[in-house]
Length: 393
Ligand SMILES: Cc1ncc(COP(=O)(O)O)c(C=O)c1O
Image (cartoon, rainbow, N blue to C red; front, side, top):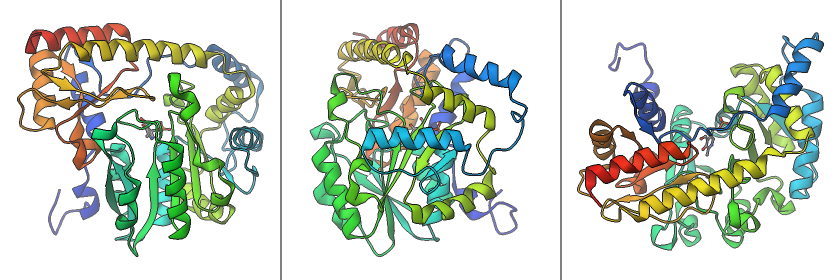
């Protein structure tokens, strides 16, 4: 559908669906595939959340109606309390909080607010594939900020100032990171915040994974907790991963008061409001003790140990940096291959093992693959048995 007479805009024609979903869809057509493509936790939404929604479904006459565009007041109130407790910063449910239909939608809204065509946003490279697509969809330019694999995928803060131009609007950070599992150091994050403040940029903190930091929990630092950065941080938390609620499509964003009205314009023009039923689930999630979390985390820690053990057995196929958090590992391909896309397709065809090509996560991701270990032990074992069969031990 490209070309002068096409109905499709050049921007959309140039986009691709993310390779994560492309590989997930492709592997769904392969019977018996062992898929490590999608970061979709194998867990069920916790029972206490499901029970609370069940009760509201019966008793709440408003259940089938729109919520206010920025979200149900009772949910915004508990979100504000929760964020304030977590960060120590003053958070007002009316001034700062917006309930969204997942972080993808909240990020889409903030990128629309920030970007005129040709404006730039700095992203870690490798970084989350969909951020690149979202920025392009807003006619913006994603500017890759190379992470240092030799230093365990850490931030190269010294390189950051040289990436900032007159067109730069924001820096996006995810810690623990997707796809590397890296937890960025507090002093580096603080320096990023300082640079953002000096250059009048917004730091967009996309936070699906901070509850999954295993033995490194004390090292997770939330830049939203720095009071001097309150006008320079947009914080995005999603219920998708740590509450196993990816299908409910629910998240919240905490923005500087000056931006809330601007974000609401995009949010309202996009979907009016996040689904009310999901907001009620979110209310139940935040008002009851998250008893499921330690179970999720210890299960994921076991899976991390398993996938690392299996990777250790195939050093002639993959070299990797041990992930610190989230539930991804991002090994470099050392087996013979042309590029990561060709490797991933061939692996699927030859062995029925699905992984995501690293090139989807930015130029530095080339010659790597991403493996999501949020799947059951069985899937991890089957995938690596097949890899060992294909490449030998
Ligand atoms: C970094 C990052 N941001 C956002 C998302 C999507 O979040 P949501 O389900 O809230 O849209 C994901 C999902 O994998 C992710 O890894």
